[in-house]
Length: 337
Ligand code: KG4
Ligand code: ZN
Image 1 (cartoon, protein in one colour):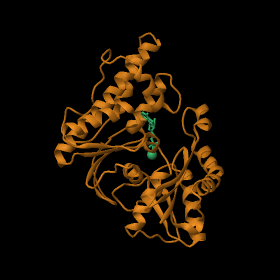
Image 2 (tube, helix red, strand yellow; image 1 turned 30 degrees about the vertical axis):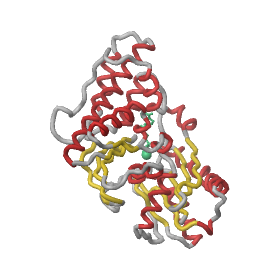
Image 3 (tube, helix red, strand yellow; image 1 turned 120 degrees about the horizontal axis):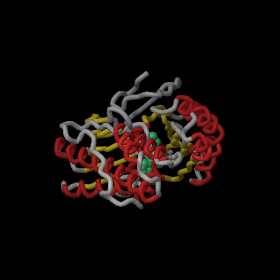
Image 4 (cartoon, protein in one colour; image 1 turned 30 degrees about the horizontal axis):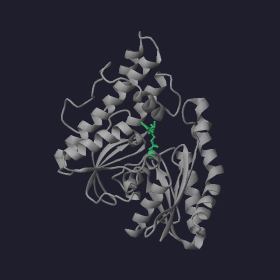
């Protein structure tokens, strides 16, 4: 069965075709970086308008790339939340309408569920149960995953998400949008140990996170120092070391608490090479293994939505003709208004 996947929750339009037997058949992505860059962040209304323009051409592109056609499609999956309401509605309206026109089921997908299933797009896929570290622009969560739709949140951020901390710290170091990749690149040139940032909430029990203090720490460190390139790189390095160190400590704690040693890392921040190396080493120390999507499937994409849709349909998901998008939506609830 082929599933068409549509992702429009934020600033990329992603479309893909996934086949349960043959795997990923085609994947297309349009990033809105150039549109939002002059504003230093995502402008929701501009995002929605651009999704409207990009979506149908991208759908045509994946059909051509996979030599497929609508009569070969078994279901349409679209991101229904969480995300920007207007942006979500574009994908939901197009996805639901195509499914209706083609007489096939539509499936509303939770964006973070798609992120945590994304390593299954790779040849070396994790088997259930596993521990998932979700680190994106809006979420930082540790989740126990026992199967498709069987998720228990073990810990999450009390304030900023890890990606949000990257973006805000990047901004105060004078790096533009999108901040995460730029800050990662700057940190690669930084020297470890010149500055020492705290590892928030690692001195108390539990699996929750707090990242909002790190940007303040970075701001206070920047003040009064020369703004030369090496100093900025050293601060970036201290920030990344602190985020990675904190995430590793919490993952190790979660492995001990659950007895699980298969770790999935997913979401935009999991594209960070330093985090991938550190988590892989931590999993190996526990006799386990780290599973991550290739970097392009860590950040938002249509492939993970098509895959999640395929798994959901095979598990019996059905949906009425009415559709809705949810700007906020708890991963462990089937729906939240
Ligand atoms: O998963 P994602 O593409 O979108 C959301 O669901 O939010 O994650 C985007 C976040 C942004 O905060 C971005 O700065 C961060 O992921 N990010 C990175 C890297 N690439 C993207 N953070 C650190 N290192 C990277 N290489
Ligand atoms: Zn995402």
